[in-house]
Length: 317
Image (cartoon, rainbow, N blue to C red; front, side):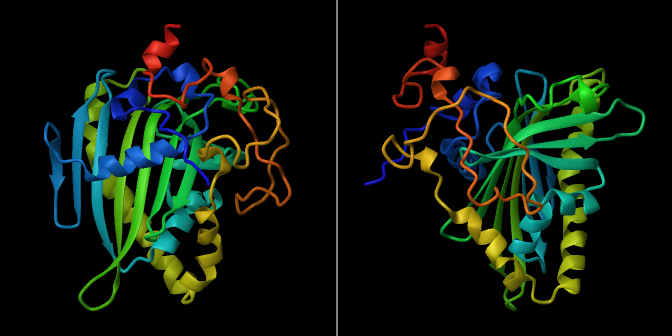
């Protein structure tokens, strides 16, 4: 029988405090999807509710790094969950409506269930910001879609070199989304969104400015997404049927979430070894391409993720 690996991170604090040098080399683990779902359900004790409207609630909390962590819950009437996921996840579609992003591209796909993506954000008056992130999505049995992103490293996109020269690379501690489909009393679709974000944009922008502006952004982003989705649905009346196959492939199990013996009989490779670039425009790994394997042995002492030992204890070995 298949046996899920023990959670790599003990809890949320363990995840947030873990050494970034290692996390930048690790594709997203199954336990991170679970941690995001737990954060969705967590109460608001010690959180500052800075937006509280019928259609959206936003809460924030200050972190030890000086950054703020945001959580937001939104209800978006008239929107199909497949359309929202497609327009968000497919980068060439997202840059059409998410005007903050100058461009976005897939750097590498199929890394133990994750991909590496690159996005450039241009803000007038300040240095360009760039994101290099692992990204993983999963379609759950109840139909909800969970998406997790966090910072990565990759040999093809070295910080401060090539096309990245002159940009400031954002440290994305967590960027998570949960999309759910519900219906109102009249049977009309309602998209439920949970999002969570914590990032250090670095540079000389004062933290107080960031903390003042950041809580306003989830509502602005949701409004922009709603308009894009509505336009797409108007242009594609059969959008749910058309996108079903695209979305359903994210239900597939990831063999690297399971203990050795289930789909793990593959040769390990050195972390971040150069790989051929992926050209599939739908962001799906080309059929027949083997998954990219990042050796845990190259990242951490043997046994991490197989027992409940604290990351700090392991790093002190």
